[in-house]
Amino acid sequence: MLGLETLSGPLQAVGTVGVVLAEALALYVGYGALSHLAQSTILTTVRGD
Amino acid sequence: MELLGLSLLMVGVFVGFGLLIGTLFGFFGMGGSFLVTPALLVLGYPSTVAVGSGLAFVFGTSVIGALRHRDHGQVDYKLAAIMTAAMTAGIELGKSVVFFLEATGMADLVINVSYVGLLALVGLFTLRDAWTDESDDESGASLDLAERVQAIEIPPMVTFRGDVRVSGVIVAAIGLVIGVLSGFLGVGGGFLLMPAMMYGLGIPAAIAVGTDILQITISGAFGAFTYAQSGAVALPVVAFLLVGSALGARIGAGATNLVDEDEIKGYFAAMLLAGSLAVATNKLGNIYGIAALNTVSTVLIFGAAFLVSGAVVLAAVCRLRSNASSTWCRLTTS
Image (cartoon, rainbow over all chains, first blue to last red; front, side, top):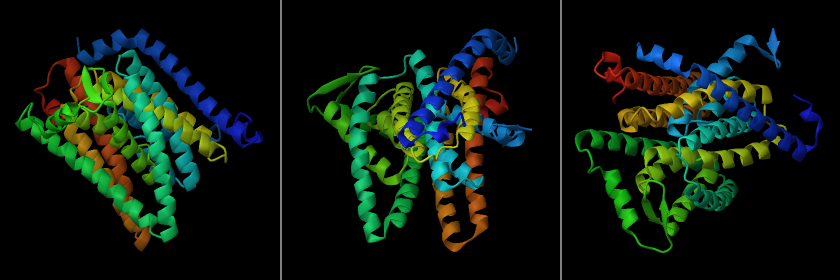
């Protein structure tokens, strides 16, 4: 995936950890923005107001 | 149709399973590799890929969990630094014990019995604590233990978040012991570290979870790096698990602000006991070649994860709706 398998061991490992970290940060920011936008709607729905 | 080489069904399974685990991880600070690795083994991945991918997933999820807990002010960096240093030394000691046992040919037996015994012990301790809390509010055994530990004055004394003052030597000693067990058993150590901080040191639950997750981030990165060097990380699997767990970790971490952990401590204890039973039945199934025992093991792990994450979400919804007296809400107070 992403050509990482063509790299040598340590570089491949750094690339793999880097990809996981980048995805985690992107998801953190993405879901954060989403929940910021939808928070009040979700809370209102859950509370049943 | 395929996404990153996986069928849409498998993509759905991984995202859903990630959501479940993320919720547990965000709330309790544990339940990562202990759930993902067996799941990947059941799906037919080689053991090194299952462990490597499990560690990479735990790293990704714990990054998100740690950021969430940091936002809520629930991470103690001083405690995390001492624990990480002591655990790193302990893991090296634990590995030496494993190599020694391997030389004697008793490694598998001792490791499996210790793993089952430790999970059961922590589960029973938590269960007793849940029952003590219900019957006898503030005089529980765990509080007594933490007070006794805090009363030991061995310099340097360190003050942690939540105004907890404990000897730095004791904190390092606990980290070292957990590190030894972690290296010995080949697990992240979250299920040992979190109860040790809460019950042993008296750290408030939310801060114990946040700090535990930060420590898991560091050890998860190191573990993933080690396995990735030999290409033993299935990135597409990790990627889809993360899509679910990132959302779940947000839900779980948010629930810590709504739900008093004492309310669902019994479920947490049940999950640990189910994990202990699952590992035992899995090993017995492998030794005697009984497939039914392996199925029981899988059902126990997934069933417990589903039940407990469901209880966390339900308890949070009940808090938001302020209708704790309804039948469903009463079920969450174990």
